[in-house]
Amino acid sequence: MSVVGLSPRRPWKGRKVVLGVTGGIAAYKSVQVARDLTLLGADVDVVMSRSAREFVAPLSFSGVTGRPTLTELFSVDGAALHIRLGRDADVVCVAPATADFLARAAHGRADDLLTTTLLATRAPVVLCPAMNDRMFSHRQVQANLAHVRDGLGYTIAGPSRGALAVGEADGAGRMIEPWQVVEQVGRALEAPGSLDGCTVLVTAGPTREAVDAVRYVGNRSSGRQGYALAQAAWRRGADVVLVSGPTSLADPEGVRTVRVESAREMFDAVWEDLPSVDVSIFAAAVADYRPEDPSAGKLKRSDVGDELTVRLTVNPDVASGTRERRKDGSLAVGFALETDDLLENARAKLDRKGFDLIVANEASGPDSGFEVATNRVTILTADRAPAALPLLSKTDVAEAVLDAIEALRGPA
Ligand code: CTP
Image 1 (tube, protein in one colour):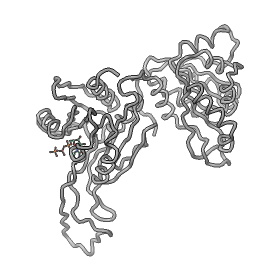
Image 2 (tube, helix red, strand yellow):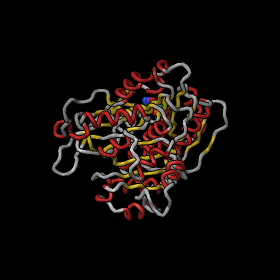
Image 3 (cartoon, protein in one colour):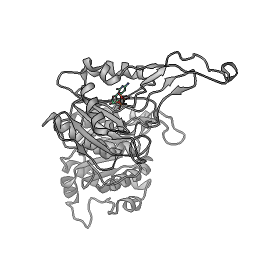
Image 4 (cartoon, helix red, strand yellow):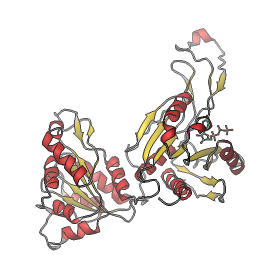
């Protein structure tokens, strides 16, 4: 997944990010990280180690951040550059973080601009390790990681498994992808709010109801709104479980994603997790009906002939049917996709399904609802005036919905 159509937004907008780059082949991917953070509105100061400059030129970073790339501890900016960088930073992220860098960070070394900046900062620190899998699993590297995580409170993001440098194996050692680094930085930038430490469950996407072994009944939901909610809730500090029908989207960073196919599978997954959930958000477009008697094999045209009748039977309602499993004091949020009488229909669903808040979604128009990146919604609660939002991206709708949830929950 790449972050497309980036524009300045919460929580990156106007924030100061120090992006440390150390000497591994994954350094080329950090140019994308610097670019995306800049497009999201952050002021990005890139600090490169000497060995990082063997892999990528400082000019590549300056070209995407519009700021000088910093390399020297002793420079014309004065010996206090590291103090200014460390003091002003809202977050320090090192990607890639090599074995050598981890060793220096774990021992509090102050032998270049990046390590001195680390000692000078009190901002959250995110490290994204990248190295050969044999090096990563070495006890010394693991001991260094344990110390910076447990002793110093740094966040360790990754590595993931996958192809390493050419000719090497494909074990754990690969740097997480640029969009994942951007999300990790986003989580570090979010101030603790009322979602910090709470558990959020989101349903998303369509469901598929089998007609036979290869065909299904479904709908055009892309899952984008639910995924944006899950990702934004995680950035705000929540533990998130996403119960998703089939979509083409990547699992959101940091989120436990449970993939299901049918409404009944979605029901079972929600039933399982709901008792420990503080906020449940039902954003899935669940198929209301399923074929009563799906065929185990493929229905063959030569056998069926000119007409095929598929009899449908009603599916369980995931939100209402699991209501008794909701934890006392938890909040439930629904969506209402309507073509007519938006507010009346949405309010009726809020009452009928026991929601505390409902997001009324206009299905009409080319810029709202299924298969598009934008949405036009109105937020309704039992006793507050409806809030009609302008046309927004689905990521901005997610932030607005979470703001409304936090307002209902009250202060952290
Ligand atoms: N929902 C659900 N399980 C279903 C149907 C809907 O959990 N089988 C949830 C949706 O995720 C959404 C809310 O209920 O949060 C309303 O969904 P919507 O499709 O708008 O309403 P329906 O209940 O299907 O009602 P109708 O078809 O009459 O509009």
